[in-house]
Amino acid sequence: MANEVTTGMGRTGKWFGFQHYDIQPDIVVLGKGLGNGYPVNAVALCREIAEPFENSGLRYAQSHQNDPLGCAVAQEVINILREESWIVRGEEIGKYFLKGLQSLAKKHPIVKDVRGCGMLLGLELQPHESFSVEVLYHTLLEQGFLVGYYPAGNILPMDPSLTIERESIDQFLKVLDFGSTQVRAGVFPSLPDE
Image (cartoon, rainbow, N blue to C red; front, side, top):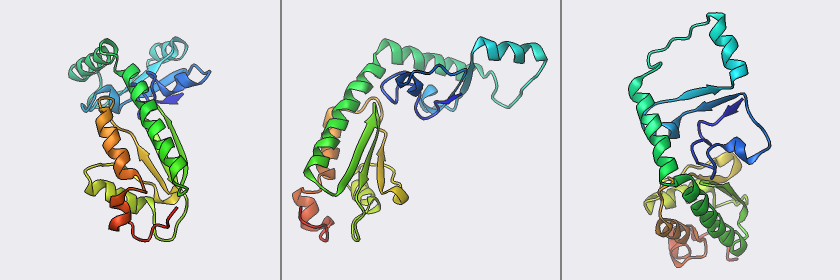
């Protein structure tokens, strides 16, 4: 079974995250990106799994099951992703973003690791007594960039929209550049010189 609620619908540069590996799941769970903001989810089953359920008489019911509007939205999202090549674009933009993050990592020893696949990226910082991903999160927020952060791992995860422009990524990377004048001038006065 593959849970593709977060990684599906092009987030990793392919339709589904499992496509990066040599596996073929029997069950795939979809959500979030499937509705592009409209609340819809789906469970796709291979024939060998689906037929016994159908023949068993088992019935599942919930309030939005087989919702025609949700189905129409999901179908249109799939059509647009395919026809407008958003997944291919997401893979290309993701590589551009990852390359920019890797450049920052080479420049600043406080960056422990950079990783990513498509538009799911992460920046891990070295532990530091006066600098953390929480501080970085607030600085980015003040500059108009909304990201998450995981304090326990000192990780700043990034998962921008497939529609993000390179100019926005460049602006983000400029703010994220720990050596920038703005950062040295007072946002992080205790960050050690590198």
